[in-house]
Length: 199
Image 1 (cartoon, helix red, strand yellow):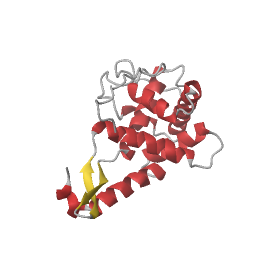
Image 2 (tube, rainbow, N blue to C red):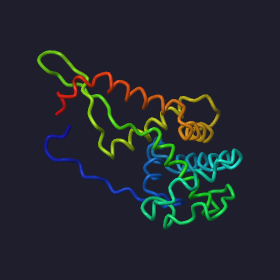
Image 3 (cartoon, rainbow, N blue to C red):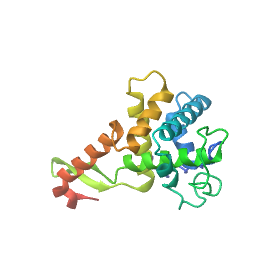
């Protein structure tokens, strides 16, 4: 850790298709070796896939209506579009599909996002696992990191299919990333007795 001063916070520009900062951060976490266009194609392909899967299983209405209250902010031009427009299934051409895809992604992230984690604290010669609440920025970072990590571990052929299936699993509260969050929460609950060592 730097002793002099805190590293300046970098400003992340919204992604070109969804105009969402959250999705831009996710694309950056998928990216390897600076190949942003490859990561972008993988994420957009996965979201396209997710919308088509939701459309075939008739869950699109719930995914599209999930975040209609998010006026402006991240994603969609003005948060408009929700359940009033019928998504066609192609995120590159259709605004309603983009809204549905972004809402599905947000609900998947919500299901992965941890609230507490354990940190090691050395007290009087012994190390304790102390449960601490996670800051908002770290929460979303961990959720994205786990989503990419467990998508990479899947056995499907391409990253597009792996990511799409991991997002679908997260929406339905199953899959590796959701299990990871449950493990972290379980660990924090087991070590609740050491919560007074929090700093």
